[in-house]
Length: 280
Image (cartoon, rainbow, N blue to C red; front, side, top):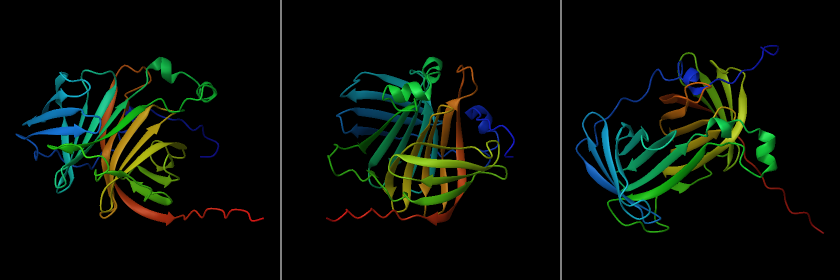
């Protein structure tokens, strides 16, 4: 393996062996309407119907009057938690994940947009020289309240460092396994242990939110092959469920969004001790 060329592959090729055993589509929300009240004053009305259809309309705040209808996939990783995924039909290369915490009337929305071919062609050196992020996958993570006003400081989905220091093996299928090392609040390292990317590794930008007891939202943005990953890590059940979003191939002409699920094993935990301030 050491003498072989290591080749990064596009999401469309990667998911062929990684999405074999995923959560089924759930009809928990079918026939239900609710509104999301975001921190910036935006209110978005959502109406779900049978067959995985979602109608949405911004009724207040920035973007008021915008509306659309999408084909979505709803899954339920926990009894009172629903995850709604769709590719936004009115926006270029954009995917949306809405985590609905129904018991606590809280939601978190992740919106990710992939770079254009021209943007992705910029070198890491050029980006670093300009003081830009090395990943060009743009992401926003927006907390909201379901059917009620947003109260600053009271939202239950909060940034967390509880995964930092953990080294975890995720087995996605008989052919695909990865490990994650959560370095700090902004970066993690991944390595493919088995599968199409075996031997490849990188360190990428990431974001963490604690959604509940031993339940975490983990979002990552890969820089080499433009990729957005959004998963819920259920540490109580030692599993993760979510999606990968990227381009089908190298021509940037088609999108690929695929469910992923894995079984998680904790390999070790590193405790980082701050160096004591030097005395006189």
